Length: 503
Ligand code: ACM
Image (cartoon, rainbow, N blue to C red):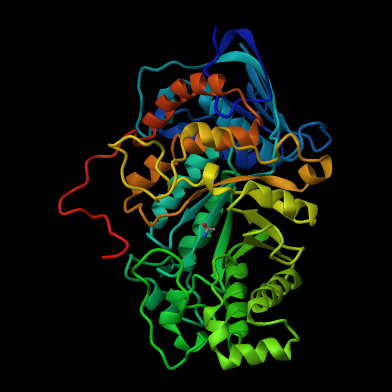
């Protein structure tokens, strides 16, 4: 029996004759430590199948954990499906969570529905699978600053990431156009910065999201932009800027804004306060502090900033950027976290930063040579806000490029001509959905899929076979249909919802 195509493709896959059928009598045998995996299996299969999957010591679906298992790493799993039973093994719980997504894809597509599907035989083909990821960082960034999305959308987004064995949701929480992270000591950030594009999260919502994600093997990595992309914060607290006499609005245009944070002590205290709250809410080892697109015009014009540069022995106001990132990075390090930032050259952040090169793949190599850990995010192959085709019926997106499915599939986080030492610095790859041109939830999902499937394949399986991926994607697309991910967008309502950047 042919195996349903899987996305991402497992490392090793051997179809075997026969099928295993789940029914009301099927029970789980759950190893100590595998309880979370069992709960996830029941949660995912429950709505469509109604399978109770109780625990029994003689259960035929075995979720086994053995820390002494070698060769599977932290996230790999082995899955043996025989006609009489299923054995899933991993060294760590995370591996079982990945295996469960495979089992879910092997079931009939109706298993993905959120309503009861009577009359379906819930069987999976027999097979032997051994599966380990190529990279430990398989991410998707979502910009909730430019267009806010309610937390219910983020839960669903996490579910969609997990289906593809992606393990990082990077939340871009603050920018010129909005501030979505509540900070009790600075309530105006969300009171003022939560508008005009719609809202802010509560601490309780973020905590519940982080738990929901963890149950699916996904880490939520927060990003707070500094020292640029902070206009929403400056609208809330003008004293954080370079001209405290000036009041600013939350920006309602797109692009790079030249209002940036000041470099006085009060600003550093503010940033540390905000990051302390972020670290209190988000257990993620990595904390992203932006760092890119920071014009230094205001620092050049500000006597206080020039004085600061001189006092610190810097060459000039440009050098305040590195100085600032050093202060902030040091604060995160001292708290036991890993600072993460966007790099624009591969050599513009302190070496202990993990960096995301976004302009050019070559910056990743520069950064790797400098000893940075690197998560590849080059815009020409991982930015999902660019239109996915040049077709005339494609909705308007970020201008300047088309990033089609093949471009994403062709991205290689560690190209073959990089040295072993350079490659060893690469943690993985990430797709970015900036939302200037993404006004609705359906639009966000339309832009994300199927390109995120290609990113998942690159990051989990590795350098791939394009035709094979396309063939598997045809079936996988029916899974996305079952989950309600739109293939096309409805025509825009009139009057159009789209905000034009310069109107
Ligand atoms: C970026 O695209 N501003 C990282």
